[in-house]
Image 1 (cartoon, rainbow, N blue to C red):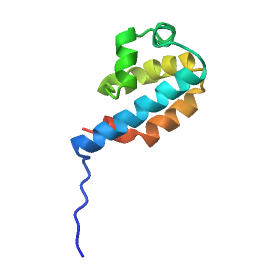
Image 2: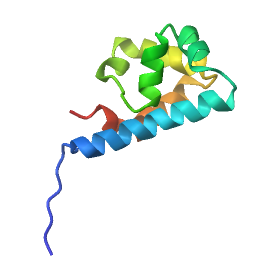
Image 3: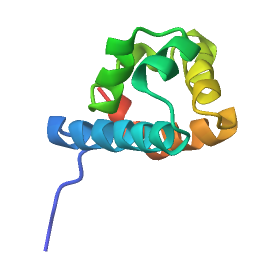
Image 4: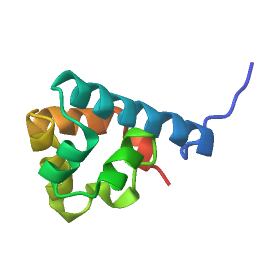
Length: 97
């Protein structure tokens, strides 16, 4: 039996990783009783951008700027940055090209 392994994930795979990441962000936000608007404001993001991430539209540049945006999201979610970094590592397929 032979099969091929691709190093670049398919668009369906990327969507699945984005949805997983967004769902985990939403679950945490709801667990601490914050609205999308509150979380977005605390992180310095627009509410629409936060809502889009939760819906599975993870922007490729979320990891840019030395993690400052990700750090602000972690603060808004009341989680340690290293825990957020683990989530990103687990969902790294969301940022694959």
